[in-house]
Length: 58
Image (cartoon, rainbow, N blue to C red):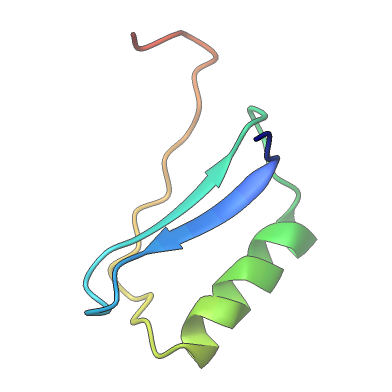
């Protein structure tokens, strides 16, 4: 299975990940996923936005 962008979460609404297979994700697509997460009642106030360095971590 191949994906470009995926929203992963836990049913308890405690953890949420927005993953993208590319280094960057355009703002409109990002907002679409985050809006959906809000509809599902996720609190996005503590969301951590990671900046990609283009360096492999593993």
